[in-house]
Length: 293
Ligand code: G1P
Image (cartoon, rainbow, N blue to C red; front, side):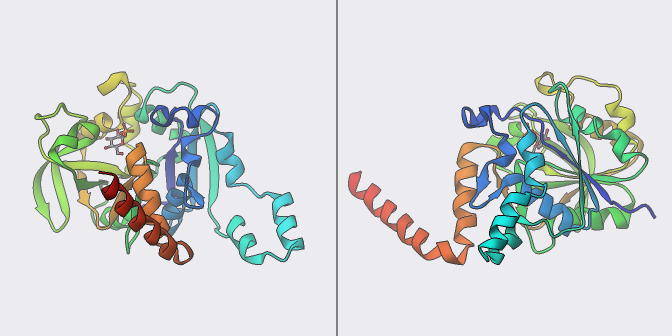
């Protein structure tokens, strides 16, 4: 049985939704409390048993490489000051290897994944998108890998969204449900409002068989004038099953401003040293805003 050992994290997007902060800083480095968003994604991959990660980067993304590298000066400084708790936080304690490749033109998600094809070779692999942070008892990706183990087929993570949000996602047209797993008739990228076949949306977690590259090789242009991963998945589904799995857990959308802010608050509330004061602050804000109204 082929094991899922490699993961691709596409991180070449321009981050236009967060301009101007993303002019000189990659959006993947925006912090949620004290960690950049991409670190949550890398940690999920590691907790799911991934051994090698390839991050697809682009122009202006060097800070990502520096973040996952050793910082000798900083580590030395913390040792000298006896700040061993902080040292633990900056040191990479995992055995995972992180590799990098550049996407030279921003031609879309399908193209970003295609850029990593030589690294993947002929193995099943995972894709994790940085706009979605998943918190779950069993890591989101691990749930999909478990499904892959059972079926030996590609699996895409989905969750339900509001009807008026279906045009922001890849949407699946489900046929049959077994537990939380769906057989899928069709995958559609960002259907126009009112035309979506369901409200089951692809949530940035995938396990794919290498046959996907047969379709990504074609460089077909899809929704928004970009090479879409969803289109290649739809074509793969015509030659071998691609399942959709309604994974358990909370998914946070950090790809847009409001989601980013609410995620920051939710995560901060999970820090014991911040929770009490933050709650008191939020209560004050609510009282103040009501009085102002
Ligand atoms: C991408 C995928 C889409 C998926 C979404 C999840 O879209 O193309 O199918 O539903 O991520 O976040 P993007 O948000 O990059 O436009």
